[in-house]
Amino acid sequence: GGSAGGPYRVVLAGESGVGKTALAGIFGGLPDGAPREDEHPGESMQLWCADGGFWGHLSPQGEVGDWLQESCLQTGDAFLLIFSVTDRRSFSRIPQTLLRLREGSPHPDPPVILVGNKSDLARSREVSLEEGRSLAVMLSCKHIETSAALHHNTRELFEGAVRQIRLRRRRP
Ligand code: GDP
Image 1 (cartoon, helix red, strand yellow):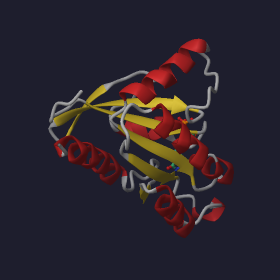
Image 2 (cartoon, helix red, strand yellow):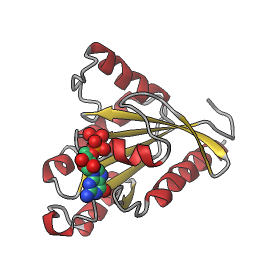
Image 3 (cartoon, protein in one colour):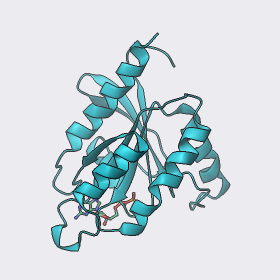
Image 4 (cartoon, rainbow, N blue to C red):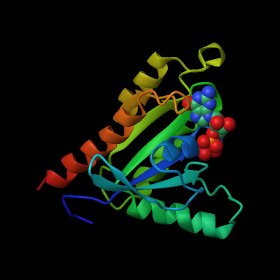
């Protein structure tokens, strides 16, 4: 929709286990794939989780999951590409996921934030802050590190998503 206010539809995409459900849960709690309206700084936000990063990963719902991911691509106002800083594989899947997202989105340049989650797990870290930053520069998107466990930077993340959506909507 092109309205200036909410609801803002924010899609959390990434490999299984990176923390999508945990991050979304901080803003209201939701089962995988289920939209949920949540009051956030005075405006409503719908959060969706896409497991497997739009790559046709079969969720327990089977084809419904695929359909859901397609519909996420179509209706998302902003996309959080989430990897775990403790899981290099989840990081290495990001470029493909972004490509798929940019191909599938009806918007020419949808707002995307690269999210390195689990920053609290310092000792099992496999992806450095600098690596995350430079990938974001390469892919022309924003970057933030979060910890869903400690609620570190989580408010900043969702406020950043809303800010980006508003900036796009203000454009002629
Ligand atoms: P999803 O498959 O992407 O939805 O991942 P989940 O949200 O289910 O998280 C997978 C596991 O990682 C769960 O055991 C979470 O408790 C844990 N987890 C998620 N985020 C964090 C975090 O920021 N720090 C730590 N230490 N654990 C986390």
